[in-house]
Image 1 (cartoon, rainbow, N blue to C red):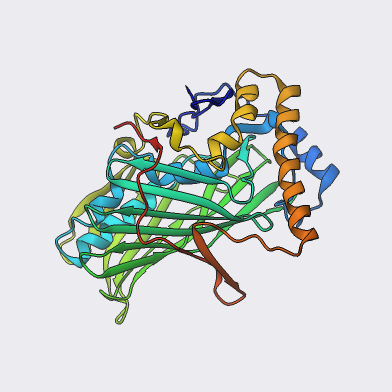
Image 2: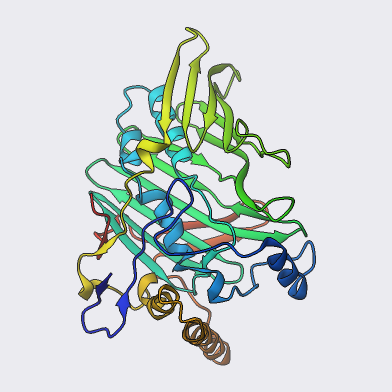
Length: 383
């Protein structure tokens, strides 16, 4: 934690969640039955939870925007740059698959980050990679990410909408939007989706990533698919956090490699022609020894920076001053409502600062960065 220049409040930057699902803040998951009863007081099965307000007692001391960014820039090795180093299209696609798997992180049951306010930003650098995130819509909640590495000539864009629904014994959060990894030296663009998050209350509390991920590269004619499998009600260590998939040719659908393993352990690839096995991802090597980001230049922190917006709320949560946390959170949310009322009174629409946003029933949400390159951020990942 560091002080932000002349700001009276302390900027709180906590460590990312560990591979075991723990954080550096002291939390105990609430009783799942109490959570279900609390949800039933406000919503019914099938309801959209995007407008459901979480009390500070159930909040992590960070915004969802920061948590979202951490899945990309908080790694022990630079997985994105590694995608550029493959000597062949096959090797580069395999590296992109491994990077995609690295964004799957444990989610703590019973607690959630803050819902980002409209226009909230998060600007971070990790080595030569610069990351800029912006909350481009509040209802529905849509986040946009743009990252560039000029040395490696790699670019990432990621449009991300969370659509959670309550189903009585569980919450299913669909993650809509596309991720695009551009390897500009090779003229290749890899387009992919995200799996969904399942939060289960009964018969035992837990969270898991479920669903299919598809990665396509039109320039090379190669594709990959993998499925995050549910452990179901019968808890089995072998099925927990497992994935299974393949890499194949788009035109012939010929399978080249088979993928199997667990995203929190080892993922292996089998070469169909030779029968050889290769480890393509080791979670303990990638998601370990992760430190909290630090403020390199407090003078460059924008008022819209996520840690600035929520600094007082986070301080109160870490000190377990729940009454002040509720007041501070109410202040942030009321400020957003007041800005919404002012814009409505003069007929003004809010426009994102760093992205152009489009939406259609056919293509969903799409966010395109306005600037070609992301400049270095005031917050950095210690290497």
